[in-house]
Structure formats: structure tokens, C-alpha cells
Image (cartoon, rainbow, N blue to C red; front, side, top):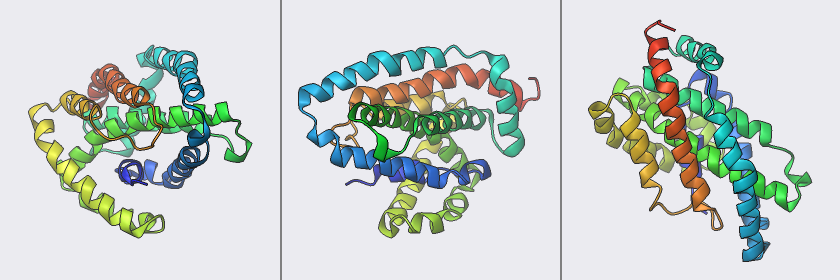
Length: 248
């Protein structure tokens, strides 16, 4: 088992409003791992592909379409709240936090007790986990890079190291170091394009050749999640700029 999802999901830049969500994210991760270990390997390839195709057509594509029909009046209050709770945040961080918050909420609403899942329900959760967490991971690249720019990254990660230790001490230290390096690598790109759009795009592009996190994961869903984050970001960022300046 790789630790990559722990690296990017559990080692988020946990603002005070995100910190309390740590254990929920771990619960989702454990459910996804259980599906990868007990359900997906036992599905015939053809059956698995049929289920994945159905989920694409009936759930993920309609979800993307509905989510992109954003009415600015419906989200401006949330952006103001993010700004109020994180005075140091730039417009890119406000927009990125909007994406991570919404991804968390959508996944939590989709989550049910794992011991009650039928195969199709389990596969639906797995697909939405992969989709939403990739959107979350893509948006978090901005939060991590901006924290590194502010010089607060190590303190923010360090504040959560005790929580990480109870999951897996080896993974927590490795993840800590890897996120720190990744954020440092992204600083230059954020400096070149302070809007954050280039960093979002590069993060999404890197997934095309990155090893998948689970053996039977659908790469199309992973790429869709990252692309979705970029599209939502493009819609939200201009409004986040106005909120940051007190113009909305």
C-alpha cells in the first residue's frame, strides 16, 4: 500500500476550520482502502468497467455540470467567511479553500456506513472519493505553496504531527517532508503567476503520468477531479479577488 493519499489528504494545510475535519478524512480514506482491498479485486474486469462507465454517465458528469453552474450570489457569503477566518489568505487561497471545503462537504454527504454498502454503492463512493479528493489535492497545492511563501508551512504541518503519529508514525514523517518539498517546488510557479491558475494547471497535468493510488482506480475519474478543480477555481477566483479587496 502506498501512502500517497495520506500525504496529500491527511497532511492538508489544516486551518482552524479544517483541523476538526481530520478524523472525518481518515474515516473516508479507510473506507476507500477497504473497497480497494475487498470489493474491487473480486469484480470481473468487464463488470467493474460497466459499473465505472455507469457512474461516469449517471453521477460524475451530471455532478460536474451542476457544480459549474455557480451563481456568485450563492457563494459570496462563504468566501467572506473564509476571508474572515483566515485574514492572512490571499485571493488564491480563499478560492482554493472554497474548493476544499465543498469537496469535504460533498464527500461527507455521500458517505454511508461501509457495512451496509452493496457493490454498486461501494463503487459509487470509491469513484466520488477519487474524484473529490483529487480536486481537493489540486486546490491544496495553492494552500501549501502560499503557506511556504508566508513561512508558516512547517509550523502548520508541525501543529498536526501528533494527530498524524496515531495513524502511522513512518508515514507521517515521510509525508511531512514530502509536502514541505512539494510546496517549496511550487513557490516559483506561484511567484510567476500569482493568480495560482498556472500552479493548478501544472498540478493537474502531473497526474497524467503519476502512478494511481489504488490498483483498480479509474484514471479518467482522477483526471476529471483535477480538471474540475481548475474549472471551479477559474470561476471562483475573480470573485475571491473582489472579496479580498472588500468589493463584494
